[in-house]
Image (cartoon, rainbow, N blue to C red; front, side, top):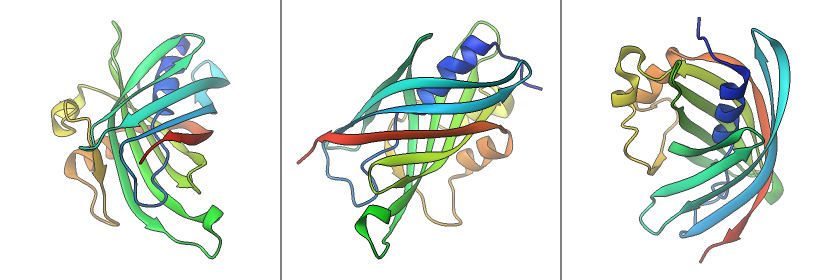
Length: 185
């Protein structure tokens, strides 16, 4: 079982929530997205809720940088995967699959935080929070955490490193964030 402290989990959750938006349609880069959110989680200490702020930027070449902040600190995004858009009858209901991988380095157990969700109408990002040990079975190398690119994923064909991370992670709760694109072409 993963061991972690509440403070480390709070930081991890904050990091998770940073990267979701402005991909419901084809992304126009460069773009910056800002928002506020909440995560509800379950731990060995019981349940809890964390509020956070986020901002991220995707440059012209698809490189992603960003941060989230909570009362206990801040973190940065490691990987961002996005699926094909799903066009609905109403533009506000257009959506896109997003999977964010975040890394929490601590003295105890370095963790990967996986935010598996959907972006709805470029405004709401929601889904499941998962945790995994960062160094378990070489996941850090499999995920190529040095490559901070916005990476497309296709239905039924996740990259092998992401599949491995999903398989070796455990669900810890759910998240929702509301935000908006603040810059772009």
